[in-house]
Amino acid sequence: MNRLYLIPDSTDMERIDPLAREYGCSFEYNDFYTPSVLDDPGKQEEIIERYAKYRSDFSNDTMHGAFLDITIHSSDPLIREASILRIRQSMDIAKRMGLKGVVFHTGRLAGFRVEFYLNQWLRMNRDFFQELAAEYPKQQIYMENMFDEAPDIMASLAGQMKGTDSFGICLDYAHAALTATPPQEWLETLAPYVHHMHINDNDLQNDLHQPVGTGRIDWQLFDQLIRNHHIDATVLIEVNGYEAQKASLEYMKQHLLYPMDTY
Picture 1: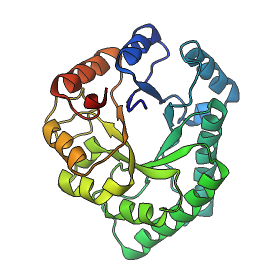
Picture 2 (picture 1 turned 60 degrees about the vertical axis):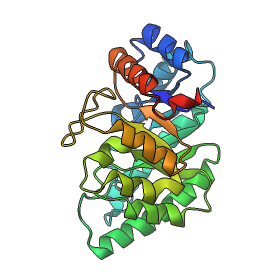
Picture 3 (picture 1 turned 180 degrees about the horizontal axis):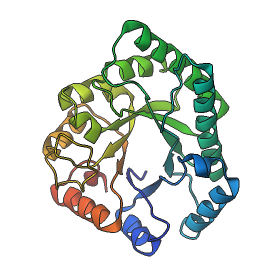
Picture 4 (picture 1 turned 90 degrees about the vertical axis):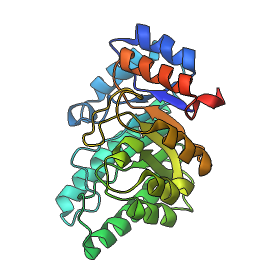
């Protein structure tokens, strides 16, 4: 199974496609989460056709679903209705392409830990994503930490979703590194539920999406934690552009960072 993923760029596939093939990478598409694309089936088909020139089979690929302003747990029915529409549009594209899975964000207000809010977030997301998973049984659903300050609430949701095999956590390690919560706690808490990961580098203060190995994240610790907690997940190198992707892959290969040792 391919465990590494890259973000493709339809304008530079002549370089990115051979790079992906060299390292056995699948793709995670970032072309479909904006409202202008979600509302335009013609535009969607145009994008798909461009990638179909390089991919005859999308079944191991993933995509980033709608996430901007998405609030499934909103008390406002209009906001919730719009959020549900965008998520279903994302899932419909994934189904049409035959993709393996779709990444969504938690949509939580960062640092807002009032009990009623957390309970509502947990209940509404659980009910909605259980229903969504049943409607799209061939697609995995990954929930990613964005501005979440700690992993406990995501772990609670994943624990309640245990009976839904197609639901899992997408641990964005770079986002986690920006929090006051130690990486050890993120990995230990979420290890049973992590199906997919996003990695890139930063200065431990800002979400910079730098090539792996060019910032301040301790990648040896990352590798150690993955192995210590026996995590078996796919990994997107979430950087844009051929040069940044190549630099990240070369660094990971040189240092045998997970999942490079599986190749």
